[in-house]
Amino acid sequence: MRLLVLLVLLFCSCSHGAENLYERSFHSMGSTVELKFYSPSEELFHRVVDACVERTKEIDRLFSNYRDDSVLAEVNRNSGVRPVSVPEEFLNLVRISVNYSEITDGAFDITIGSLFELWRAETVAGRLPEKSRIRDVFGCTGFRKIKIDETKSQIFLDGNCVRLDFGAIGKGYAVDEMARIAKKNGITRGLVNFGGNIYAMSSPAGKKFWDVEVRKPGSGNQIISNIDLVNKGVATSGDYERYFEHAGKRYSHIIDPRTGWPAGDVTSVVAVSKTATEADVFSTAVSVLGLPGAQTFVRRNKSLGFLVIGKKGEEKSCFGSYVCP
Ligand code: AMP
Ligand code: MG
Image (cartoon, rainbow, N blue to C red; front, side, top):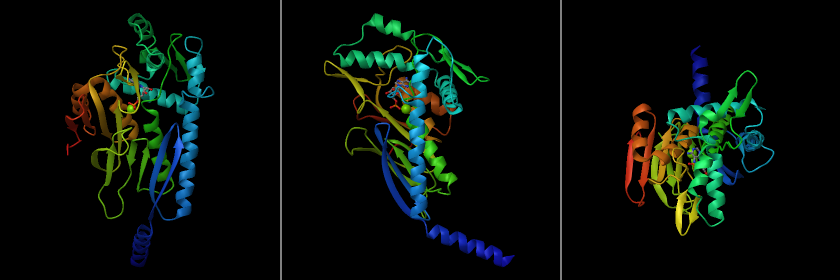
């Protein structure tokens, strides 16, 4: 028995010692995925990354609003027309999204699609949407217009102009899926980064945390903050990289579902939470609700933390588990 324990201990310490850090990147959904995994072999590492590549393709086929053949496109085309049968995974992320709409008091809402499209099309055409148009399209928004039939695995969008948009949750979800695939294959230490949506798995050997650099999106390499993370997700929402522009003024690509106008109170939000999906959702929700939203959410959920950068860019406020540098 004692020999067996000794052998197990020896085996464990060898296999830890034999883990090496491997890195690989690939493009997906208009962005870059960077994977850093500690793996006992290069062969396993590449096998896991190949599985992650396949997984992001599957997620894209379900949730992309850039392709006509995605499940999302089919659901949106049938808005107000008929219920659409969808795969369980699609139904599940819709369920999760509706739940987050309730938790965030409607600040995060995947039915934002029509309003988003209105703002995009009008600003590309060089004008701001007319108030009457915003009012009309406002009627196409509201997560309660999503009707789920659990027994038939169907979704009906109640209104002919409702459009779903997973832009504020899809990448975080994909990050969690990649971390799950790695763990399932025996890789426990690693960092998954999908265009600033990050999940830090267990820490590198001999270290307590991953030192994660949060960069300003679209700024090249400017670092907003460094955070020590382990088994946590982080996401950044902001108006640096993606925005609508009119007459030299930038408007956030995050729409306030309460008003139909782009969110305007803060420049950028970094959210930390127990999953990358949740961080993605809450960085968007706090971009809508501003500092009061961050205060409310950390009171309700102790695992959340926020760094909020104000409108002028320099003033920073931290909330919950996020300790300001
Ligand atoms: P993120 O960068 O994660 O904050 O996501 C922003 C993207 O989500 C936008 O480009 C839209 O596609 C979509 N979006 C905009 N406003 C909202 C909102 N209030 N709730 C959910 N999704 C939104
Ligand atoms: Mg988001």
